[in-house]
Length: 443
Ligand SMILES: [Ca+2]
Ligand SMILES: [Ca+2]
Ligand SMILES: [Ca+2]
Ligand SMILES: [Ca+2]
Image (cartoon, rainbow, N blue to C red):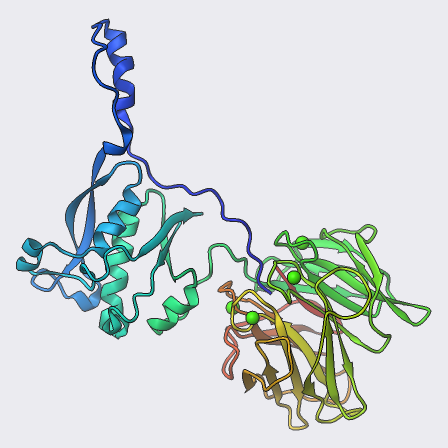
């Protein structure tokens, strides 16, 4: 469930515009020289260093790079340095053994660069067809060391570099076969629990420990609990379903605090499973309901506004393979492919203890785009062992991944969270909450 806060202000290093001070200095000395033409800021230049490989000086595959000077416009030396790097070494430098993936073929392929909270965000045109061999192990080491060292040398106060191709970081890191780092503008998901139906305990890290935000919201009899970004401000806040006269009332609040609902409406039927997601990619998460037919087929009804009424879109996806019996199937929602749109999924518990995830990247009927078993040690049938699937962007890369919380008896539930929508080991493993708490994620 990705949210995209507004870009914070762009901060790039600026050379001291000392020429601007010159008239003041001259006036202070009383020289009376006032016929100099005014300085043109655009014509000011500053010297920067770009970093190239040179295998006579050091092994390029280990990331060794060496500086050569460039003169760039003083008003934006960071952009100037990266543009100069992307234009490649000069002929004279090549004669001296300097080497780079970049040349006149890649010149001009910088789309933008800005510094966000100490991270240089570099957005490139699609380099992949121009320099395909840069994706090898040695090749990517050279590429990243040249770009990264040049960027950090020109970006005062920055400590890391984050790359995108045409605005999409997943494309860049998949090209180099690297796991994507956390996105500087996307918060990672964190654990939350709801106890006794109305006590909310949110924690701001993927570790055990005390809650960092605690409040009461709703009533102990409320039947379903959610954390979603109802107003699109980047923060997920509580929502509950309360059955009144057999009808599900959605009571949604825009802050992580107790108080009255900011939105209330009736949507769906009493037996529906309530979900919430950003179906249209506008940053605001809105309701959906999932209805199980007698044959176990799930029908999803989604809409992109905070009120009742007919669903905007309805379709079938998923099938409870053991309808009416344990193990159950759970509807789940997430942005599995990181495109900014939430979509649907089903987690099926199998009698042999496997949790099978079938996830689709679109909000319409069709085959799963992702189908895998994550966690195979579940035991069904009573409250001694309790398992629940959970979804979140645990590493803040913009893609939601699977998780399972498992609780037994007096022991605090174990959270087993995985970054990739695939079979494998947990990337995060900690205990948080108490047995029988409802487990959720938030950001
Ligand atoms: Ca919000
Ligand atoms: Ca939306
Ligand atoms: Ca998506
Ligand atoms: Ca993720």
